Length: 202
Image (spheres, rainbow, N blue to C red):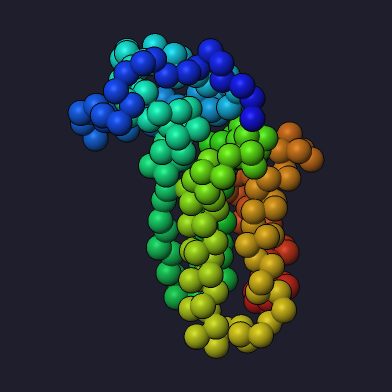
């Protein structure tokens, strides 16, 4: 991992957590996530977050001992849950695509910012999966489960297991191939052109 020699904690009570409000904590988290999106992981420092949120650096270090811990906590605060149930597997997949597209730019920037750092820090990698990957996979699996229960697609259909990879893959690859994020319209068209036909759905 990139050395954080200039980002070491000051000699404060390492085990004593400062008393900050949930609203103030969320302000810190939003600041670190925004800096990640705009500047990348290596450019984020405790000093920079302290300056942008007008607090002391020691306050941040009392709450989160290291930058990776701070970023991991911010990512976990970003975790979302989705409940999509239109009564139709095809429409559920369209809605899931639309919802993913609405957050595509922000989430893809986070994934790009942490692409090099996360594999080197297990806690950071877990937090990234918990915040951005696992909720989406869980939502898709629930959509598929209901579709199977309704008899819209056989449980052993070979295309089912590849739906998460298809959705995540197009989110990650479009910026590389075309220089644009996968917006809602693009993702819905992708689902209609590639995912639904593979499942035998209209």
